[in-house]
Length: 186
Image 1 (spheres, rainbow, N blue to C red):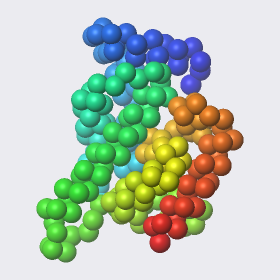
Image 2 (image 1 turned 120 degrees about the horizontal axis):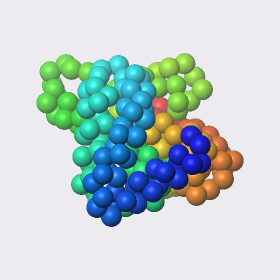
Image 3 (image 1 turned 30 degrees about the horizontal axis):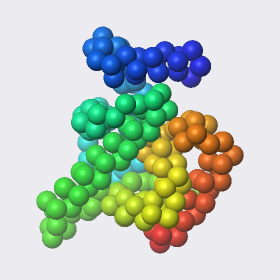
Image 4 (image 1 turned 60 degrees about the vertical axis):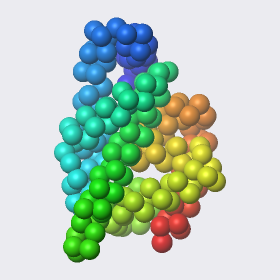
């Protein structure tokens, strides 16, 4: 995405936060397709589909709206969206587990190749959530980097921008976090 487009999105974010409903509508239209693409990417890895990409985006957007946080820029907004999508998937996994407990139903899982360089494996969303929470207590930035990369689909450069560190630092953080998560999930 070019710098001019990012500046336009940042301006729309600022105007939207200030109450400009036209800016909010234009912002939503511009980011909706990008968020749906991220959601489709996350849901494609799931063995059991808890929802459609559009539903995940809308649920995440409702969570974002309820938070009433002022996003600084596109990267910050996508970071918030990644967190909201993570929460929606975890909430749905918990609901499914609660509703199906004892009935032999499978938990909501993700098919992932992102956390390790091995062949794709099935990963329980709730196990990943617990491991990410543990990682947050040890290193908040590494946990946030994983969230932005894995749930938000941001590139290393976008994650670095959102967390205000260098791309090299993010690459190291993600490598370390993935190794830690792989160990924690085994």
